[in-house]
Structure formats: structure tokens, C-alpha cells
Image 1 (cartoon, one colour):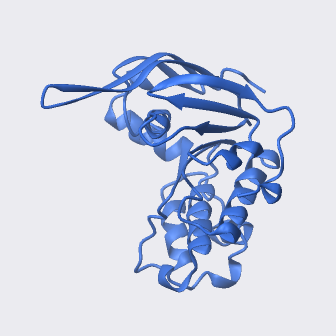
Image 2 (cartoon, one colour):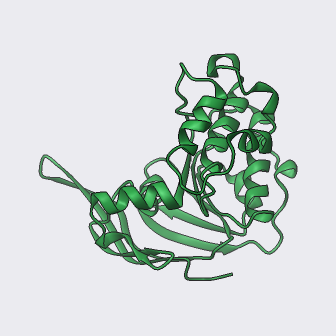
Length: 235
């Protein structure tokens, strides 16, 4: 593994609203390896989503450095960050963000259309077990199936980095297990770097490594020598 795939140094994020400063991240130092399955664990307000958004180029640090694959994100302008997100990152959120008037196939194909290296839309849907439901609209799919469409939409771009913000938060046990299994496979079998932010302690058991955040600071960095499979997670 390349320990410098993602490198974060002295990273701070401060939001200012009506002259009131709110510290979201304080002095974060972190290296993430290529092909690693990392879980960022923390309660609401711990800074975990802010950290994910900065890695994904959706937000910018107040100070500090962040490199992904050798690219300095803090030096990029908005146009450069847009290209970075388009070509290198796939996002999976708690709420699926599917376009309700498009079928599963059309939702995934829309993502494929913005990538120069996209896999076939049919193959992306098949990889998450939804080939037979490609013509269904989101309202005709279960929550787990909608999240699998969202994962298909993410992986069709063939991105190396998947950023997942509470990807099982809106799902039942069956749907959550299916989603975690797919993310696990993308990491273990395809070498994707997968970062999952969650408040759920059981999910952390599948990770190679667990970062715990509290009050915007890293309070623990744990290497998991024996990660379990997603099917073994006790919710």
C-alpha cells in the first residue's frame, strides 16, 4: 500500500457565521493508503463529514495541506476542483440523491456520461445485482436497492476513491448489509480506496483502520489486524 495516497497536514477548518467562529476541524494530520478501507467514526458534530467533504473537494480547508494522489487540493481553484471531483472521486451519501423521473439505468447513465473512462452502464448495474431492475424508477425500488443504484452511479466512473457519508444510515439490516458487502468488495477485490464516515460502531469492524474524531480532532487511530466481513457485522 502507498501510505501517501492521501496526505493531510495541519488541517484546520473554521466556519464564520455572523462573526461567530465554529471550529469544525483542528490540526488534523493523517495519511491514507491506496486500497485501504478506512472508517471515520464519530458522533454528530465531530467533524467527520467536513473531513470527507474536504478530501472530496466539496469544501476547502481554512489552513493546512491536503494532497490526493500528489495533487494539492488547497491550491486548486473552483474549476480545478470540479475537474478533480469529476475525474477522480465518487460520492455515496446517506440519502440516495437519485433523480426521481429517471429510471435506474438512466440515473447511472447520467453519471457515465460525464466520465471519459466510464464502464458500461449495464455492467455497473449488474455489478450491484440490479440488471433486472434497470427500467424501474426510484419509487419502485426499496431503500437498499436505491442505495445500490447510487453505488452503481458512483462506480460507473471507475474512480479510484469512493467517499461514503453514512451510506447505511437510512437502511434496514438487510439493505445495510448488502451495501456494506458491495463497498467491501470494491476495496478488497478491485483495489478501490474506500472511506466511510459513520456514527455506527459495528461498521468499524470491517475496516482496515478506524479514525475516531471528537470535537474536530483525531482522538484515536486504530489499525484493525483482523477485520470481519460485512456479512458478519452484528448491527
